[in-house]
Image 1: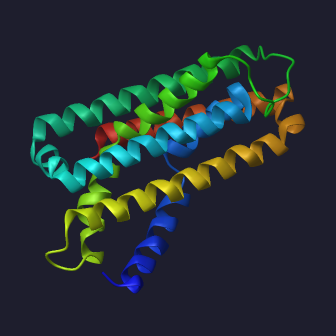
Image 2 (image 1 turned 45 degrees about the vertical axis):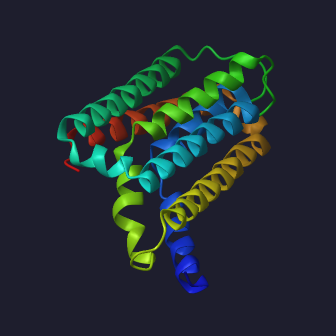
Length: 210
């Protein structure tokens, strides 16, 4: 494989990563709830799911899942339901407007924060069939015909690394804006916006034909 093909893929992957989607919305929501630490763990959950989906695509399991209409539909509906649930929670939080006095972006104590952030990021990405479609449909044209599956794995994991770096950057940026984001009016607005985004992504995923 040539470095030119790899560089071209990285350029495309970088564009895909920065396009707003469910992963960004979930990391934003986690950062608002638990600070930068929760945002980083949520980002790690997203990257972990990308790694596993990339491994599934390289092993040929992704093709089997893609060709199974029932399995793909179940995965799609599960992902949509999860996003919609997170969106409803965000809207409820915006409606109540009852926020702790601690500043957004401060590290939250306790392992439960890390686990909750990681779980939300992982489930959101793992139940999004578009990630698997990206690895199965978009990635192969960058590979030489007959290339070993390890090359597909390397490309897919590079995408996971880019995703992690970008989402960590988002968490760090929100931490720097901690005092501003801790204002009640700002928090309510962000909760309402992220809640609407999560429910919108969920609805789009449920209705979309892949």
